Length: 472
Image 1 (cartoon, one colour):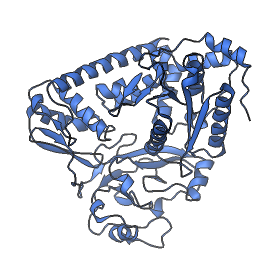
Image 2: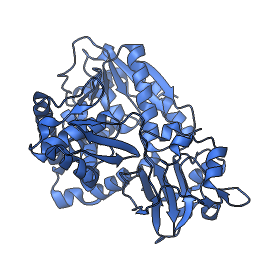
Image 3: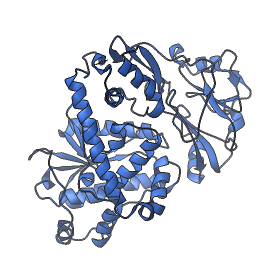
Image 4: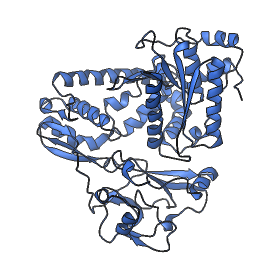
């Protein structure tokens, strides 16, 4: 069904009054991909770009169906396709191969792969997304809590350019627009959009931060606090760019073999070493690692000392004046117990433990086996239970979900065809000193959910280098 849009003349009149989005950074002829989910933010972005007659014929609408929300997600795709048709724009719809829930990292990876395919197919250098100042506020707060550096605190930026030349453009950030301003403009013009109910659920950390800021941000910090966060993010981005430029002048740029020369960092300010390390980790897909876990590496860069650290199940080495990832070295965690703290990503192994509500829809997917336990699982674990992890040890055994009895981890690894070289690099999660889950294997029968449940324990494994190597 087509969206209930005003007539095109009325629509043009409405959007003509909106702030014009600055196009510095675009060529005068190149096509522009516009990521449109169907939500209010992306609908506003599409219409604000469409209002510019010079841009209008160059817009290409891109919609990716994550297939997480069933019929509602299919309805989003139908809505976006109809909206693009009403505006006379080309629209490409993509969809994830598997239906059902997945980790945020998996969904993001699938979406970015779709964008990469369309950049090639449509000849796109730039893809515009609908991030705005509220996203800047939420991201900065979450990353402050994790001890992020300049690069993390400055994101998302108005322009993000990648090594291969393509760019993500976020013009609503450049226009200093907030969510409330977008909603007011859409409502005044009687323009439709789709609502994603999952954005209101207090499951994801971002959703909880959004609710917290919305309930008292303006009262505590003043009505223009989002603009202040945006200004700080721009200053932080400029500072990061300056440090990166300084590092390049010193020769601390990426080498053909992927390593980074670090000799020039010796005796330099730790902030410079942190900038070099952060850029290197981002290029290696390890940007989630941050905070105190990076401090030993930063200290080694400044002192010129050889060292190594484990970040998200990947060994990072500083040796002989070079920062690099060994090509064949895999982590062997060993038997030492490490605490698993709720709501805090474990930078060493990439585990994240959260308390979430399993509603009827999620329970239906879990009970039908639509959600693989390879990288995420849900457990019935009481509040206050002792959560920890370690590497596997000889004799480890537990009763997998649905199994008639216990089995050795070594036998389960063999049955699931998990490669021998990965078995020492996969964390073993313990609850009250009892094995409850190993990524790539089912959760423990003793912690099974029996129906919808509030406060279930969700475990997610965010290893950038190993999770994709597990058998599916």
